[in-house]
Length: 341
Image 1 (spheres, rainbow, N blue to C red):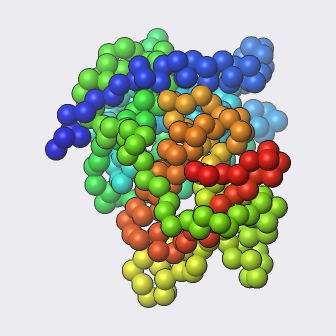
Image 2 (cartoon, helix red, strand yellow):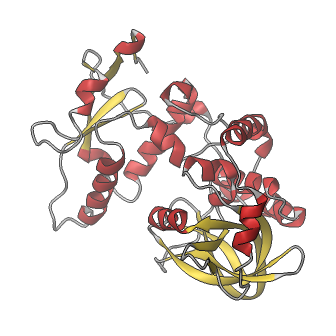
């Protein structure tokens, strides 16, 4: 298998990652040390939570995937009170499922490194909602000063997921996060040198939405009407300037029905009646590109990459593309330009 021999090349994204870090640092206001110390006064290393006398609760959380990267945290509006690297004992990281996402499993005498964050209750609740296919468990960690602590970590709820290779993009996020938070070089080198990845696609290999009517255009205001709340305006979304319309779910007895129903619910709640590129870019951070702060920050190549990833997600495990049809292109009248991608 050719992919089994491919290793991460993170140097390609170093420059834009540094630029993204500069953006994030300029926007974050860290909690002052006296407030942090006041919280830590009530810390108990045997518990994954800190409960203050006033009832406020804070959670120790071990990130094993993209959440150990400061850019990924920022894009999800997560701001740890403090963070530090550590080793998780008697567990190992595995990559599973169609996307090769990080999971952890018990393994006697094994260990791996990750980043521990202290989060507020509100932020932990938000993270729980993001990690829909994971459950929280308690695991033991030891920091680099040999102090132990119980922390929360996320473990996949689906137990029959097959092992799979992570994407190069995903491992790049993990490695850069580990470097940023000071994870041991031995562990980082292991990820670089031993973990095989699915290589990034070259831009000329990106999939593209085809059969888009060349003479039909919609404005953002017209697109907004198609948010799925009015049956007279079928649900539509815009990807890379191309507008897709949902044409219905499969029959309820179809094997693909539940998956399509779930996918439709996600699309409607997050992207209905809107340009989806920026929101997808936030959830699908790619270190190759500088952190986008708005739709206008996305380059043509970045949008093409997002379109390719969207199509991959659309068809993963089924034929979702048959439930969406291209109906036109976006006309950006406020810029006096028309998308012709």
